[in-house]
Length: 444
Image (cartoon, rainbow, N blue to C red; front, side):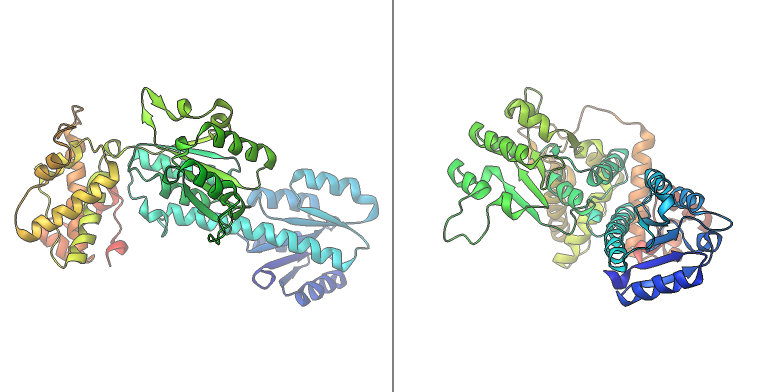
């Protein structure tokens, strides 16, 4: 870690700058020295890949003003202040303003190295979290699986980013098939425990006695795994179907949570599949456990509330299955697009995955319709269409976006080919792609 981290040393005394720089360079840090705060500010941006060590008393801009400007640029940048004996109260005030720590002259070089290491660790964590945030916002590998740009999905992604940075336990609710386990993975990936253990346990997959042993121990001699609470120590323990825990195991889990104290060493992410109006997760769990787990809460939206995401998902999935089966993806007509948008999707994304695969297989055989697939899935349970209407404009825009997306994919991002097929001038195509958030680079 030290070799990857920079340290900016700011001091008006040349000998001091050189001695600090030489000592930290021997510890493997990449150091750069500045004779004034003004010079340093030109090089220290909001994502500076390192930490700052600065003297408090300097001509021109002093250390306190320098710190204030740094905190205004990047409040998470670790700044270690060097102070004389009489300036300790000033250093304490600096820490109140956001300084990481301070060193009193004359200081022990080993103490400086120790502080630098702690500050570098904190900085690395901050930068890693920011990188994960950008990856999520830009559609990184994990979060690319949370496809969609509907308001409901944008809110979900923001919730993941915000709660991922928090430290409390989390309750994830939502209908079956909405992707709650994927959300749990994302919460872990964007949080401070990203590099630590992620343990997933389905509470509904075990009988009570076996579940107790898997969760709390002792494990069976033939099972090399630690109990889940030990295996996940310091990381994230995800309990799927938490409502399946018996009262006795809920009591043990509550004791485990209480014994951890605050902040919790191990974060618990509980996934609940109960969304019926007359029977919820709150009904299934003892009140003290529910309120501890639900301190932070995420509700994953059902597919029927995600608008044009439905067409985006269907297109991506059918393309994947078409490649897998070695055939062309089915072309969706305007009528079929409307049917997909209006379907109630009781099985949510999981149901859409099945429909997309079967649509590809039907297309390969040259038979069947999307409406028939929707009807065969739930003809006994659900009507094919929802009773909720949508403005015509929504259907038109969703279909238009899907059509441009499909055409761009087929032509691998060739703008001229898409213009010819859709009979659109370049400017109109550019405007529509901007409107629907489509980027040519995604199709190359």
